[in-house]
Image 1 (cartoon, rainbow, N blue to C red):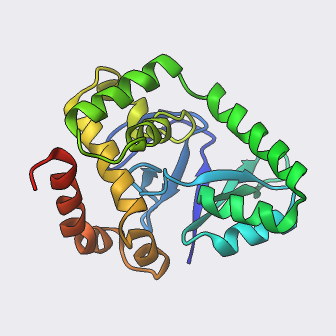
Image 2 (tube, rainbow, N blue to C red):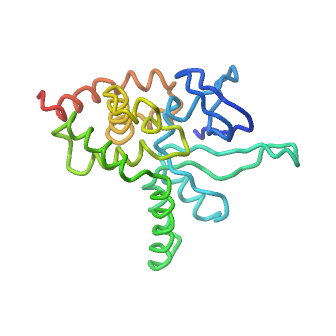
Length: 220
């Protein structure tokens, strides 16, 4: 099941969290046409792959357990035009290995990693990771850095970009950690891809998330 993400052409406010997303936000729409940000839609862990390489796009989509098509309105052509897809990072890497020679893979990955670094405030990222480690001292080594980097990227309105996160609010950090566990360590994305409603899919994995959180806090 493919999802659709729109790049908004005007001011947008998420109908679930109330966040003012501004113009050019990446959003989804409910059946009633209500705006939902990628964070609330549970699509913010996916990575954008621009259009241009048909083979890479096709294979990345095949390998990703969850995929969204990104569309943008063209005022000149009066229609939505495809900009690329959102897929899992691991799917892009696997597709690259299928498509490209080793040297080309390294070049492409360096370019993508450089772009990611440009999107991140490195000092804030380190502080955010340190606060994750403080709250979850038993999480696996390096996981806090991965969560912080993902949560703090700019384009999708992720948890780490909010005002609460910038003040290292415990609730904001908890949300970032829970989002990571939900996507990386449960079958949540598989359920979404099968067409299970988002709220039901969350209910199915809540117990698994709670157990992992307890372990990472050192409570079990």
